[in-house]
Image 1: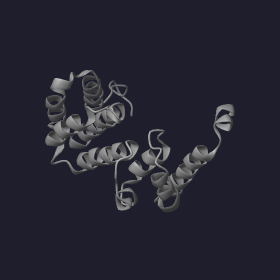
Image 2: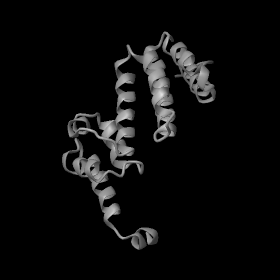
Image 3: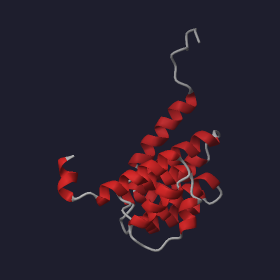
Length: 165
């Protein structure tokens, strides 16, 4: 592209960046309202992208924190009609369940998205031998199976070897 405006960033890119900034700085009490406002943007795909980044950041920060559950319930009310966002939050909840050592079903893991399986196989928060073994054997992609296998290998090595690596 050439012309006098070739270097200008598209408006949706600027809005996306502003949304990410606002979502990063929002007070907990105002978070649901801001998420709802972002989702009203005329560019639905861009808005969902900004919100999913926010969900990923917040869920990762709160993963083992008791505040996760009330936060997830509040956010669910705002995103209830957004299938992708609802699934992502449900998968973060499953990741939390596994990380906390609470009961989960094998089918939940094997039917989860590629994104979830990668997260579960690579995050240091998931230490469940059962979950990692299942992903190493039944993960949807070679990348997931390999990552889960590496996590299992690290678990099985003596501590003195881990600290020398």
